[in-house]
Length: 175
Image (cartoon, rainbow, N blue to C red; front, side, top):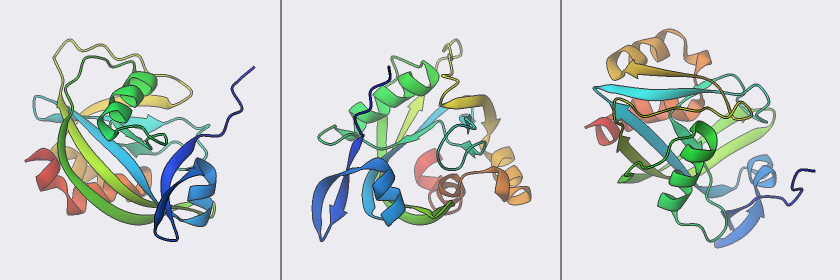
């Protein structure tokens, strides 16, 4: 039997950082903490296509890993945990780039209003990927320029946050 304990993430309620159940955070559009990881190799970034079972933005392409820290969890630890859980990746050195904030409608009456710690990690050529099918339906290594072109041509295929990162924060993320 699956663990039925709700995931509590850090969100601001009336100006105070408070543990709030993850789905409720998105339903209420609360400002909350998040982590995004970009794994790069040879001028390419690793994307994941979100599993169709995800409760928002299913089937859309996103950066390597985007997630929320559990209450009391450090951002870097969260990034390490989730790249392992989602993609089977271990042993990466996550380099903090910047903290950014955005707000986006993600469909179904849900809103992401995130304060995101952005991390980048350099992957070895032989880094194994073992995607968790409950989280990820596909992966792709793509050059940044080609990704920007695809997102411009087919924005509906990409998560709102990936589009925001590419438009507003690409220089910070990719240098």
